[in-house]
Amino acid sequence: MEVTIGVQNVSRELTVETDADAAEVARAVDAALATPDGVLRLTDTKGRTVLVPGRSMGWVQVGETEKGKVGFGNV
Image 1 (cartoon, helix red, strand yellow):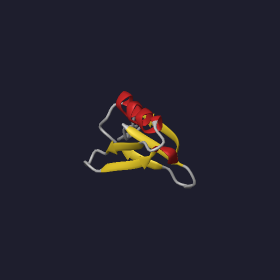
Image 2 (image 1 turned 60 degrees about the horizontal axis):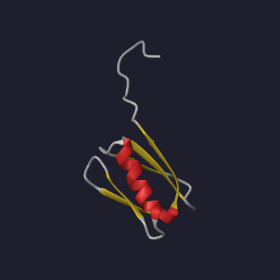
Image 3 (image 1 turned 90 degrees about the vertical axis):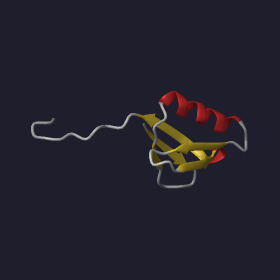
């Protein structure tokens, strides 16, 4: 699952590849936004933890990763 996070006052977004499903990521985002001191914690596919303060999040996009296509004739 690919999660892209827009951080306020930062021109580039954060992209995290995680094994969590969309519902689990949505719950984590909701929990981070629930309190002024909330922190979004996500673990990527390599086991690293990404922490983003909830008050700094501008937007979050949760979506499936697109599998790369191999071979000829792909449109």
